[in-house]
Image (cartoon, rainbow, N blue to C red; front, side, top):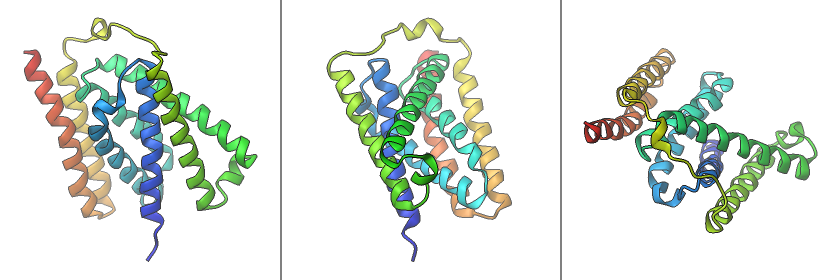
Length: 208
């Protein structure tokens, strides 16, 4: 029995929490208030990442899909306007990438060396994830970051737009998985995306 999938999920979760904490701290948002919802989405990210990399050979789509899911998380659960959600997600992702690459080069000397074994890869994920969590905690504690009036950029029709995006994503990804006959994932992904859809519909009703 291979432990690689379990290791991938565990260390990718540490990495995902680091990204989430970093993007939230930049804009003085408290990550722990939404930790459980974020963990649910991060686990979804990890699962789709594993499928795209190892089953479908579509590794180049992983960061795009992850970024999309972070934007949906911020929009539907934390109720940040979609434009700001995109800005926050991209900023946090870029900051995490810079920190991760810097740590990897400092510790391993090169990217290929860091990718030469699973232990090195997991070590890089853990170091960068924990470093970003620590930096995010420090930034929030000492009120370092930006504050903006998010509502000024809220679009009138964005609620229905987000619902449409979630539905489209769910259908497209289910189709990809069906083509490769991975029926367990076909069950899991719609359930996970319905979680986001629930928040989106609830927010839309509250705004009516």
